[in-house]
Image 1 (cartoon, helix red, strand yellow):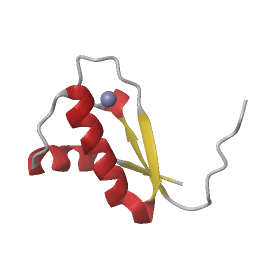
Image 2 (tube, rainbow, N blue to C red):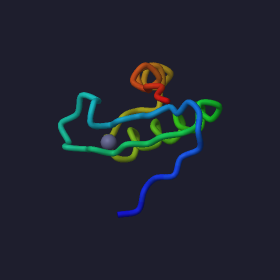
Image 3 (cartoon, helix red, strand yellow):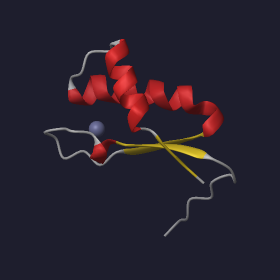
Image 4 (cartoon, rainbow, N blue to C red):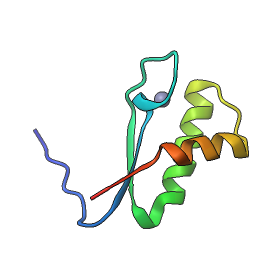
Length: 71
Ligand SMILES: [Zn+2]
C-alpha cells in the first residue's frame, strides 16, 4: 500500500464522516495549515455539490468549525 508522504507541520483535516448527514459519506480532505482557506473552499464545494447544501456564510462557518488541526 502506498503511504501518504505528507510534509511535516500542521495539517487541517475535514472529515465529512463527522458531519451530520443522511449520506454515508466518508470523504476526508486535508491541507497544510497555511492553505486552510483552500480546504474550506473545497469542503464547501463538496457540501454543495454532493450534499445539496447552499453556499452561505452559515455553511462556511459550520464547516470551518468542523476542520481539525493535526500534526
Ligand atoms: Zn460528504
